Image 1 (cartoon, one colour):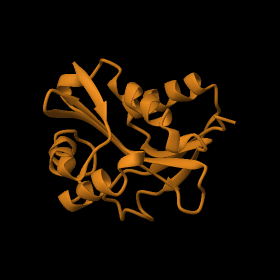
Image 2 (cartoon, helix red, strand yellow):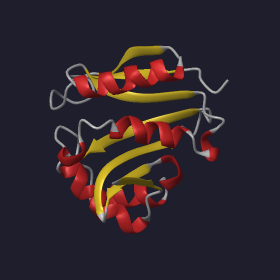
Image 3 (cartoon, one colour):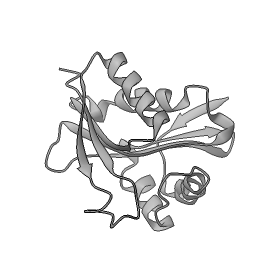
Image 4 (cartoon, one colour):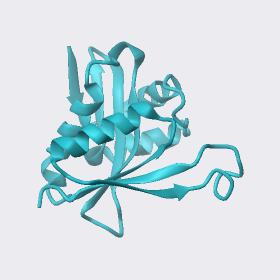
Length: 160
């Protein structure tokens, strides 16, 4: 049985290990994952199977745009894939009272990340909202060739 939780500071290292086990996700420092689990707990979500961290979504409300939730990463352990967990986590996150004023969701996705495209396309359908994308981070300009280009995906408005 998988349960969904607000992450806590104590979950930071388990989140770090989960993300390391989910290539091609970018692995941030453990310190970053502690901050996500502590400072951004109300805009992030943790999935556990017993005591094991099997899913995590990190996000934050954009400081300059309080009606937009930016999703930083979606991580699901191999053992929990194919069960709709990422969709359940997103839906649960968007139901939180502190996010009722959010009308847009943004994220970035590389062209070849088909699972993420499918996840956010399904979310837009469930929310009956538009999904728009623009070129955002360029492989050469921003990553000096070390990372694939990322599109900025914007879903909304919803909750209007």
